[in-house]
Length: 483
Image (cartoon, rainbow, N blue to C red; front, side, top):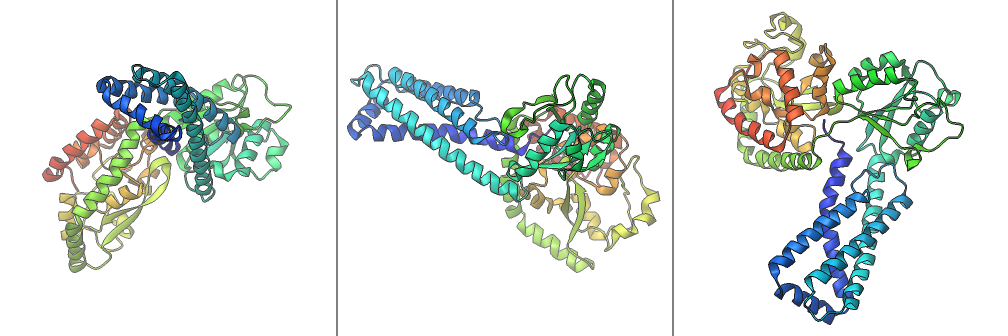
């Protein structure tokens, strides 16, 4: 599954934190008097440079371990500011201790006293703490602005309507900057009068309605507020359904008791969560994937600009209608988006679908017809050469798609899915090319196609993406399976 965007961002921040620490160390040198600063620098440069380099590399690793152990790279979406400041203070203290040990090691043969090195370490700790607090406050302010405007939202479904569920919903409603959007509640009845009379969310159905809700609504997480022991069988079935769709499940319920006599706030950290199901791609790898998507798509749009203009001109000259074909497709998390392609069919081709649907050459919900009468002469060439796909680079650059991933399907095809495990393909971003694209395209059956998508999700790595990209080039030239 694709990890949440917040996790990718936090992992990316880790790279900057090490740079901030080394910057703070440089500032500490400068602040502890210029002569002392240049004396220590001279000792670092002239004595055993290889050993100094290795010691510095180890220092960076130690710093990263300290920051990680102090929850720097866990999402702070639900934590209060005081808790984060305490973690920052402890992390800065431990980083200062490790900095002192590093200075003692690399300056062991110099004339500098322990007091000099201790002073640098203390100033470093103070500076690094100030830098961390400043950057985290700025990050919180930016996150609050973006989330309050509807960006970086996590769509959640709450299972249960007890007081714990009500308290959770209240916290979400009172703090839009936390970035949670409550889709509603699921329960066999309103167990808490407070939950039923509040406007936090609607009762969307009973526990048996969860599979259908997962199929029709964009849901990123399911939050279970029911007691785990009392509802064990129902919760096990919920986890199984969410696993098919690639959706995370977390519990804020207790083990045995149904209700709490005193409300405890969930989001500030008063109530911990138990992760019942969550699969994640390697966050570092996924970060590289997104950066690669943005850079490569921008470069290809620039490089293919002449081809882009030529194809657009030919479409204008050879048939009536717009240059681009726009269609709603189902993307990551079952969220709809508008895909861009060069138009290869006559105008209003979708309205003529009923006239050719009985000619469908594939089994399953998808529609493929090799000699579709709606395709224009130029369109047939564009499809055969895959030139009609070029505008999708805009979708990749915007973040709706990836270069590699399961092909995005129209709403019509999605509504025809009969098996929930097929829908796990929507737990990742759709792509321009995929295993299906390089292994036969339309000549592969629907079930084999879905199996290839599951294989891609389960075996994903950066190297697999690179391999698929290189295999796509000869597949395009062969035109195998293209319609």
